[in-house]
Length: 600
Image (cartoon, rainbow, N blue to C red; front, side):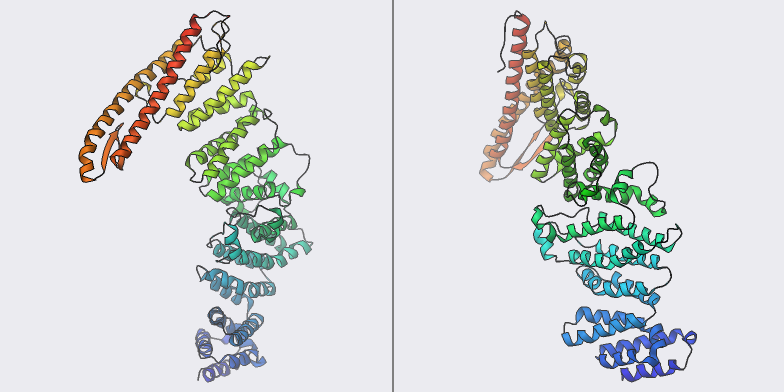
């Protein structure tokens, strides 16, 4: 019945001119064709499509059948039926109006979600390529529309992170990336083969669309993608192969990546295309950072870089990209920033990075970004790697650069452990300076005193939370101990003895008071906890204790006692070091110049 109904509609339309087809005719043709497919009359439908007499009708109306055919291909697994569906799809792509067919295919690609996204993309990429190549006008627009639609759908797929996820490719992203390269190649070749150089040409518009696609791909999926570490496996890494092809496309269409990445960030726009100007801060920065990582860390096409570039210039160029990575929250992204920083720093000799570089914003924001990773990242290996990179960065700076960075991080880190790390580095630099024959003004004398003002003090005086700041306080005491031992009052190389009165008032006296208050408070809490625990043990309930105005989370009484005793032990340790420092100060101020006190 469906076949007869379709033939009846076709017979009526055959006597009409193309311009006389009505909207009603299109609707009836689609309904009848859909019924033929649903009822399994595939062979008869193929014959109707192939009939030369129906050429005009199929050209104008046949694209309506693509959707039903594609859905049958997605759901039907029977080989015999699929063969007919594929034949019908090929015929429709060959015979239908390419403009209408393009829009129909893109609508089909936009429909699915989840794992069906990759299925329909893999099914329709070849037909889509064929349809676009048939278009005579506005091909650049059509290519751009298709690539934008495809990328939008692919960006919804989760990016596989582990080697196992890449190999299984559950959502088909890796397969789609490979297929997308084959889809794009003919259009890249068309740009290469076109000798027309006019800015207004269709070829230039096609270049713009391909360039947009390359930058979108660098951001997603390549910004978050992970790559195999072993070089022998690199050829089997589909995302790495995709990255290599994308970078190759850039050079092929006239935008070699060395020129692009070294021009990025300059006031003069590299591209005149309006969309790039609008998206530069949001998309282009991520894309360029991704490109820099692929080139410098993964080594993709690195042989295209000029060999004369200095390591400090390369680091300066990459610091902006590292900053972009570290500003992101995804662990897979900011880990790339740490790797890119390591790549740049390892090329530079210790103490050779000039302090003037710190006048560039990213040279201060990058170490601050490392501090955030060190203190907030849940992955231990990344925290340790960031700490190692911060130390490596410090090692590369000259003396004034180290001094400037220390001041910056002491003022901005707001983390006791990080501040302790910086104070230890200050101690190391003072030690180096005292051992050198020539003066180092940055870690001796007035400059050092200015730095010590940020170290040897309690931020809230005696009211400072000593437990929360214990790492910083211990590091400060150890630094002070070192200075007292190393620098005689007569020599006063560090300036310590000139400023000793201020240090005593801002640091030592408030610390004494704070220790007495804190120990008394915790001893009282321990006594209360012991008294309360006797009643709690009978009922086996949990109890709570308030320390420093904040309630310790509910836990068994014996566990709370351990916490309180641990805090008390920390105070005892601080008090012990403080007593030793004051003992050394007393000995040093009363000793003769000939007396020598060794470091203990």
